[in-house]
Length: 407
Ligand SMILES: *Cc1c(COP(=O)(O)O)cnc(C)c1O
Image 1 (cartoon, rainbow, N blue to C red):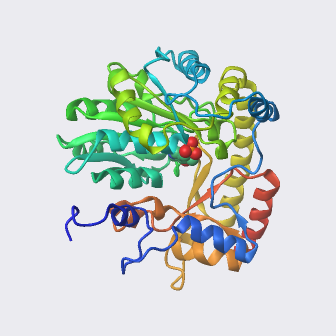
Image 2 (image 1 turned 45 degrees about the vertical axis):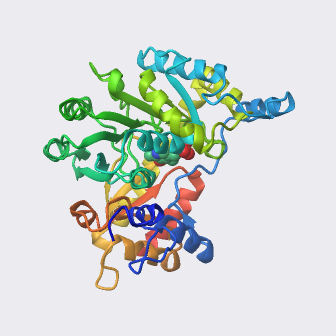
């Protein structure tokens, strides 16, 4: 079957592990692991959302907004106060100057911003280049657009997962319409260095590609690591659409308030699609997030410090169990090479992840689920597992106690 004859949902299903080899749909590995965790009473370090809700005063602000009448469609681009707060945030943290009227778009989470941007900017015959492993919605959006997904691998080493710069240069071609970046990175915890970002910028300029960058973990960096938005590199502001969200920064993932910022022509392109995905949403959450962005730096610092401590606990514990851990500098996941635990019966991370809930009562996800099926990166990361430290300290301790039974 040609791509044109195939219903687009099948392309999406195939790109995201939703399709079984016989073409029927099945749950993704994430849904499968969450169901297994529930069925076995396992501690779920698979799904990456926080146990603890975000700041009470931000939640109260949303309640107040409902009481005071923020209950009808907000403007399609987002409320003026939130757009101003997003522009102020980019100026304060990164010295990026944005016109809130034309260069800021509020979306239904980062997910909608990513999908709208890729649908707007790429189509059949175009290539969209991502890192590999990659966040699942990145692959889904490329499949929805009917574009071709190409990748440049992040390779584990003593300095963490680092971008293969030669592979990046080779993968960025004249057909590359978009480079879809993610830093800090899910699942590896990589915070792309300035050198890596310069290589991405050079590749984008050479291919005349737009950069769409998913920065939802921008504030969740550890060990004094600095998140550098690629839009701040020389010449990049005019070809970069930067995406972020309140979900991870304020532990309010269910509110689905995200945004895209950048040059007016790219914001306009994303808006044209977003208009007919949701038009607008989250009326009472928008004023609350506007306040969170303006007044919530202390809460963000607290979350970062708390997550940093939980990261240390999880890294130390996984090492004690015998896993080869790559210490993440950002986001809220730890990736570990589980080779020492693999056997003839459990030959890879996927098999081990499926066995762990019943065996010891811990759920995680295989890193290969974030790779293209059958790719060289999927093969080299086949023994790897991803664990989240977005859960309470006591939940992480309990998971480690259970994992110690493996020794
Ligand atoms: C969680 C996550 C998202 C989704 O953000 P929402 O604002 O909830 O839509 C996007 N990208 C990455 C890398 C994520 O981990």
